[in-house]
Length: 306
Image (cartoon, rainbow, N blue to C red; front, side, top):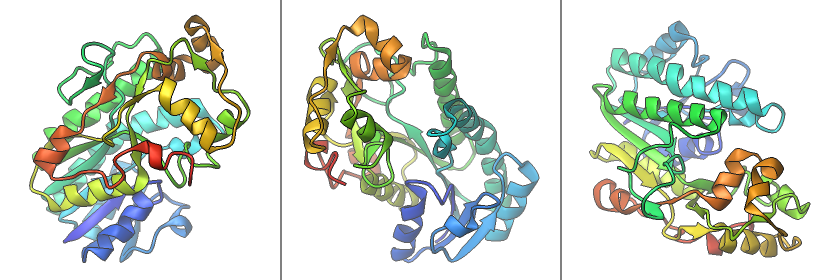
């Protein structure tokens, strides 16, 4: 199959190109201007800024894909400019998705697989939620509300694109090149004692190893299933479990405990929410409908080791 991977220099997109080629697919890597040097070994590389409609139409037309995989984000900017990283990522999820869908349809593609996140649900109901739970579009933090609204719009566009649309809601990624890698930003915060455990650490995290994110994307390209799927491991866990474990694995100091009320000021609203209030994500639908399951069923065996 001819497959175009948009966002092919990213944490998931880069290894995905090789995984698809290993399965016998012909892969085109769509990258930004200035990024070809970081592109993976694809069958061809096409260049376009995803926010430039004409450029995307031209690049996708040249690739003539049967399936398009949307792995685009600007989260590489997080370390230097977090506001710009989130603002540009929101635009990529809304405007970039619209351009990619238009181009895919014009090029005759039949299938579209797009990345989303499994930790955007409103914190209500069961502690572990399925894909039908409402998204947190009215979150009290304006930045997070904007992020979730962009996610909701991406998912709406993909599932109403007229293509065979698949949305993969990835859990919190760990493994190479992620924030939870041994050299990642979150690991550095844990080592420095800058990531305390607020209150009882009741927020639930659903993790996913990068290799399983790649495997899910390959499965989605080759499947006939459509819809929205949580792609997470089998072990949703409260911060009270995973954060001390992460610290031990890193040989870091045990996280200090702080009152939950102080967490937003110390950590920012999003991380405080993740550690105190977030709900986990159930992967049953991905198992039964998409035919995917994690090869790393629990974060306990790998978090902080790579």
